[in-house]
Image (cartoon, rainbow, N blue to C red; front, side):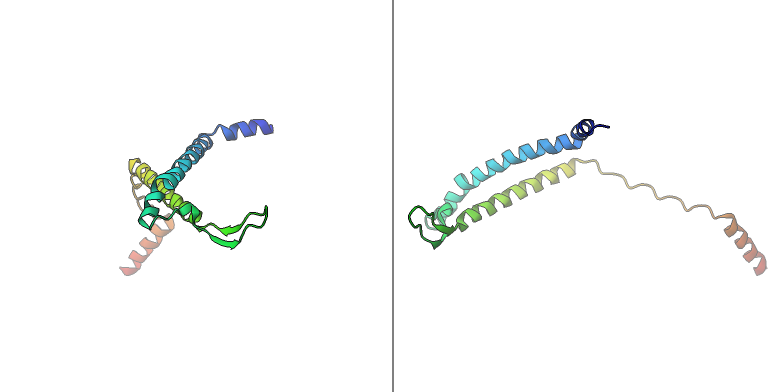
Length: 133
C-alpha cells in the first residue's frame, strides 16, 4: 500500500474529519470568547474595581531605554486569558454534558448463567454423595 493511499484512508476516516471540523469550530469559538472577555466582560469588571483597564495592568521590570522596549510582566493580559479559559472550559463541559444526555443509555448485558459443571465435577459430586450414604 502506498503512502498516499494510506494517508487517504487515514484522512477519510469519520473520526478524523469530525475532529478537524471540531478544531476549526473550536478556534473560531476561542476568538469569539476572547473578544467577549476583552471587549464586553472585563471593562465592566474593571469599572467596578475603580476604573482599572486589565490589559494595562503590568509590573515594570525595566524602563524603555532608547529603542529598547520596556520589560514588563503583563499580569492583566494573563487574567484575561484565564477568564477566557474558564469560559471556554465551561462551554465545552456544557456541550459534552448535553451530548452525553442525548445518548441512549446502554442496557447492561444480562449476566451469563453459571456454566454447567464439568464432567469431573459431576463425578466428584456423585462420589461425595455415595460416600455420605
